[in-house]
Image (cartoon, rainbow, N blue to C red; front, top):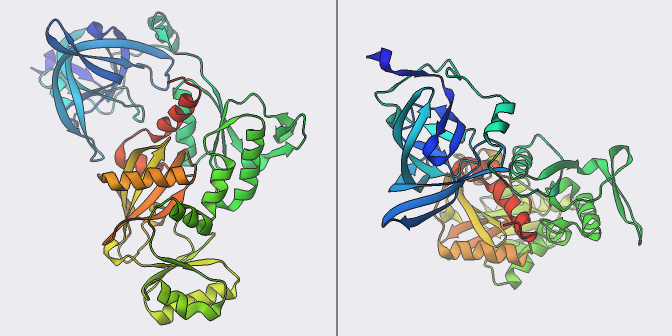
Length: 456
């Protein structure tokens, strides 16, 4: 019986003759029940009184310049749960799969796989009775060369030429920065990593310039994505301002980033725009400590350093005596602090809404480690998918708009009084939210730039 079966490795190249896809690399995964094909611009339609679906595909990984327009009979709509636990409704099509010399019909779902390693996932339903898998092997049925791929796809549509985009940041190896660079390249743009510390500028009324290591002049950029860590906010925002003077589109403006980094000013700004926050106190003199504690409802309470980030400089004072000690200790160091009511019913959980261009593109619930009250992923907190309410979405969008941020991580806490805003982050991390939701957040950031240039 096994002699009649096709033997496959863990990765193979296959084709879909009816869809006009001459070759595509597939992950062969007997652990996955359903097969899935990468697809974008998915739209159902009626053809000959039957349900069909049309979609586009970029069949070559890390290449968004090659596009194939496909259509196929619609078989079903199905809820599919990914390996990360994300549930998504997908369209299901049926078409012939050709692998090696064998060809047979399979069902597969359509989904955006930009953040995945393969454009195609071959699941066990499609392999049942026809395939044996040797997981130690790859490409047992051969693989195309780069030249043969170009030849196979020479007649496919070429996507429009891209933009020149600079990522202004500090660490090229950081997950978020790597993903943004990949996402831009995948969408056909020319991406450049610009290390903030290696940039310097010429202030001149007629010919302002930004120079890079070795004296290279940074000009002719279409857009800049500022990802400025808190420790270099002043210099990073000065560079962003210089790019703005050169008429370069910046995904977040220098003004928006500067005000988002001032926790006190940003809270005042949010309140002025009608966004509710936990009751917060601010004072400069240790003599006001008792009244400051009373002002926020007494202990337990939170004490925050104004310059803190990623949960650092945030302390939970469980008693009045502890609160006095922490406040006075911070003030003896001349540190600026906020004192904030502790929302006990949140139970160490908060919600991170990722807002891009006035829309919540993803949301996760962050939960603190046992014994910890800060839910930050960097401090060992865990992330899971959550369905946010329309009110929470409204607050997140309103907060990003109040701060004038096109990209923002908005942190919300659920209280007995309703959702309250904790903080707005102008350089939110992507790892936790992409890992939990399986969404291409970096790609959405690039799309926001494309929208500004009317490319989408």
